[in-house]
Image 1 (cartoon, rainbow, N blue to C red):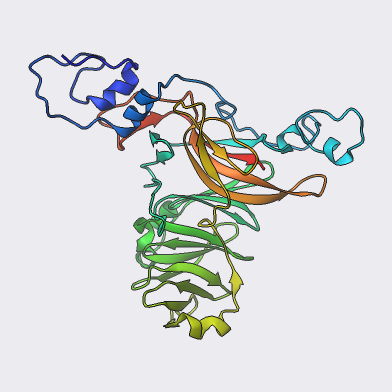
Image 2: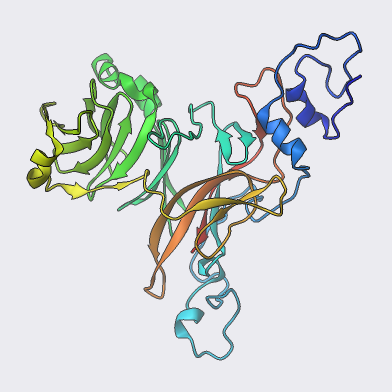
Length: 363
C-alpha cells in the first residue's frame, strides 16, 4: 500500500490528483495515473518547510532617500571618515535587498529556477537560442521595463516605485479592427524587450512593436520569414541578424519595407544605435540555499534573499545620492513561505505561489 506523503495536503494534491486530499490510495487502485508534478517532487525531495525572507512582506518595499543613513557595509560609520558611506542608506548598501514589488496574479512554482504565470502565458525556457515567452527585463532611459509577454511594467530602478503598467492585449482589444489585425501576432510570445534612447521595442515571434518610453503604441512590423535576433535600431529602422544563410534584414517602420543581404555587406551601413536588450542578463546566476528547496539570486560578490523558483533577469546601473554609479541585479521569485493549495482544476502544472515578487539586490 502506498504511504501518504510526509508533506501537507497542499503538496500531495498535485501528485495524486485522482485521490481524495490527504487520503491513502486503496490497495486495488489502478497503478496508472497522473504523473507526479515536478514542483511537488522538488519540494518533497528537498524537505520544504515554509520560511520567511526579506521578500516575504505583502506590501511593496521601496528604497527611499533618507531612510536609515548607514555605511556602505550596512553599518553606520561612526568615524565620519567616509562621507560617501554616510550618504548611503541601508537599502543602497552592497548585498542588501534594494526593493521588492508584489506581482498580482496566479503564479506557479515548477522547480529549481522555474515559475509560470498562465494568465500572461509566461514560462522560462532552457533554450539558449530563444527566450520566447520567458520573463524579460531591460534597462531603458525611462526606468526598468519588466515584461511578461504583453503585460508591461515600468519601474524606477533606484527606488522600486511602479511608474506604470500596461497590457497590450487589453489595449489591442479596444482598438479598431484594422489595428487589431495588424498586431495579431501578440499571442506568438515575447522573444526579447529592447530599448533605444527614444523607444521601446518588443520582439514577438510574429512581429515587432515599437512604443514610446511611456508605453504608448507607435507602430509595428510583421516578421514573416525572419526570426533572427534584434541587433540595431534607429529612428525608423531595425536590423535583425541570423535570418538564415548568414543574412541580416533591415525593416522600416514607416514603410514596412524589408531589405535582406549578407551581413558583411551591411556592416558599413549599420550605423544605428546599439540596443539594450533583455537577452543580455550580465553575470547573474541562481544558487541553492543550504541544500534545501530555496534558491537565491547570485552576483559576483553577493547573494540575494531566499525564494522559490528564482529567475535572474538583468543587471542595471543606478546613480546613488552620492553620485556614484552602482549596479543592481533584478530577479523574480516566489516567496519562500508562499506555497498554496494545489488543485486538479488549476491552469498550470506546479504548486500555486501565493506571493510572487519582482525585486532588486545591490551588487
